[in-house]
Length: 360
Image 1 (cartoon, rainbow, N blue to C red):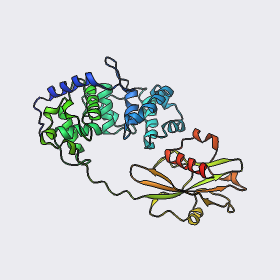
Image 2: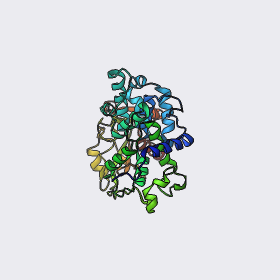
Image 3: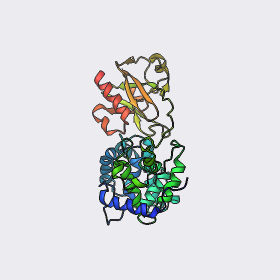
Image 4: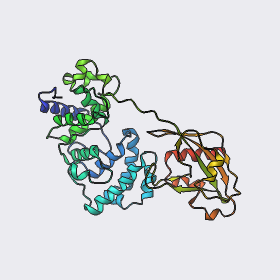
């Protein structure tokens, strides 16, 4: 599709003028006249992946207070990073964040590469994040395409093919408008426009600096775009979590495998999370992920722990027991109940903890 805008430079100039008047004040954003810090740009972009600005802001503040430089983050213990990340979800991001910091600190002398191509070779940095860092931190004319920008571009060009299949089309079209002058500010301007004006429902078109160039508005379909492919059904997954307390009152935790969901995080041991009915407790005990003395009596606690992941909802029954003789040989970490907050427990496991404490 050809651009509906004959003067792309005029459009980008108009967008930058709008940004200079309406830019958001965000903790990771350089103020006018300041040079952007690549570390803060990178950290914020990783945190913002599939997470809102409101949710990220306090995490960003705590991270930068604790680890103000990429070298400090690289030297941090992974468990400390995972614990600080708890609540943001998508924990693979936290592991990649730590690995990326180490690569930058120890292989690149503490300096982030300044091109999209080089940035994409770093752990956890994909096409969007590389483009955002290149544009915002290094003023490279990169076509940045986050969810807000996808919405703006799909409406300006009236792209009716549904996402995610239209991503490459949107990226190409975005590139036709990306200016050589202030590309970082331009990318952030589109982010802000999508956040405050070109919103999903009831867009405030009368306030948009591109309203006269928007093809979707001319067609009256701006609120219908971007179209999205129908989501596949998300079957409920179920499992059993094992709340095992030793005679000293400590609870058994274990570390999840590095690869896979919640990789490297601590958990209350549980069965695999599978679609279908919950496993029978007697069968689950036989294959329990905790090696407990045979005489230990497990009992299901009333109620169910529910948690919604992006790709599926989860229901966990919690079975509780007191460990008998031989508990010291059980593989895992015995955590005092009053110190559970010190461990890198993801949100779903904190729900298990609260449920168990309220029912035992």
